[in-house]
Amino acid sequence: MQAKASETDVTKIRADVVVFPYFPEEGLGPQAAAADKALDSVFSKMLQSKEASGLFPERKLLPTMGRVAAPRVLFLSLGKRPLLDGYRLRNALQFVGRDVRRYCRSVAVVLDPSVRDALAVPATGQAPQAPARAIAEGIGLGNYHLGELKEAESKAEIEELLVVGLGTGSDLSAALAAGVRLAEATNATRVLQWRPSNRLTPSDFVVVAERLAKSAGLSLKVVERQEMERLGMGALLAVARGSHQPPKMVLLRYKPRSSDRSGRVLALVGKGITFDTGGISLKPNPGMVTMKSDMSGAAAVVQAIGVIARTEPRVEVIAVAPLTENMPGGGATKPGDVVSAMNGKTIEINNTDAEGRLVLADAICYAISQGATHLVDVATLTGAVSIALGHPVTAAMGNSPELLEAVRASSLEAGERIWELPLFPEHDVALTCDIADIRNTSGTPAAGTINGALFIREFVADRPWVHLDIAASSYHAEPLLATLVPKGPTGVMTRTLAHLPFHLD
Ligand code: BES
Ligand code: MN
Ligand code: ZN
Image (cartoon, rainbow, N blue to C red; front, side, top):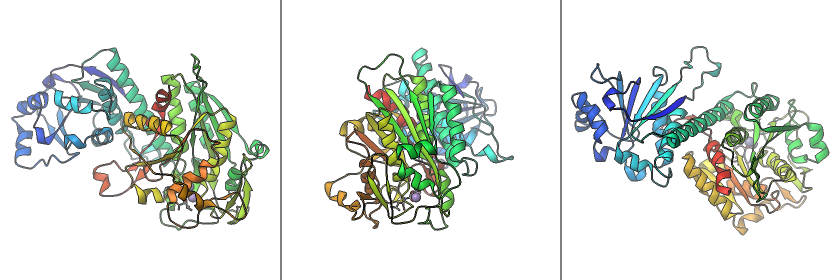
């Protein structure tokens, strides 16, 4: 998708559809009103008669019968102004993109002054670059589709975005290009999330990383099983034991050209379980099919560093992705087995389905051995997080208020939601173990998400660290929620992580 800014008269815009976002409680702004007037006020009459509810994120698509230059217009309700944040804005625009991508190659979005002002609230940053980027991201996200493996599925995409009402100029063009890039990276994460596990093994994932490294100019190292053994990655190897697929650890590195004298190295560590059966602690049948996306964290860190390579922050960044299947093969780890991680800590694996924290333990130790000074891990770690927060939120935990603040600021820029859960000293006792330094689960359902974080904390060697549990936010299929949030894989945290190095600078 290409995006550009323009200041054309709304009745003269040549695009396959012209979109007018509006706040129903405030009536139409001047530009939307001009389009409505050219159509004999058909849309304002629909609002009056309640044929249009104006509920977020209602879309009313109207043919224009030659009354304006564009063949159709679309009125998009942004709902109640105080409720609009970057997340809702992108979701609303993404619905528009999804609605029209099959038959519209070009989309124009027209912002009236009062709508433009609403997009400039802190959630999206300073006007007009931040709203421009948000719009490019929202429409660009609408280009995501599942067509990869389906002959009949339309692969048509929106190729051109025109943004009217934010002015023009090179800063605006740059913001739009950044938005397009962030949307495309997010969509690339989503494609990987939804690729079946037989088509995305750890080895296949390495090929994806190789391609990305080449196109983005990143250095790549792949740690193979033998080296894992030599390095003492007993936790990752324990998870891989039940599978015929060899485990891999991907390390991508971005080195800034103008060196950042602070010496900080940000590590983005993403859980890469290409399929999670639970291992010997086998998962029940219902829902297991979604475990092909248990590598959503790995996909997010890899796509994020791809963007980072192009935006060139001054901080060095590495992306680390521990990749393996979690299978119940004959060689599989059994509940009660004790292994040692790369830092020498012994772990009793009392539940082989808590495998994410095991692979992350070694990945974090490895990131530290590669110079990481700051750590952010992203993982589809616990089902419990959907009980705690539901799907529209990523849970954040950590040991550093400063780093968490940086992640929070990035998430606001990205239009993604995070919410902190506490790690109190009284939570700590849950992983106490009588046979090893630590056990991988408490054995009770209490504070499941927090316990996952507490386990990982054992391996961060007191570096500033934030853990992001995306088990709920990476995907959803809830019918009621689907009216507000597009269902399916979300590519969550790709954009937040792409912004993060700039918040450490
Ligand atoms: N990959 C799962 C978590 C998950 C659940 C992701 C649902 C997406 C949707 C993870 O490996 C897991 O199995 N976690 C266990 C932890 C438990 C054994 C402490 C869980 O959540 O049940
Ligand atoms: Mn599991
Ligand atoms: Zn898992």
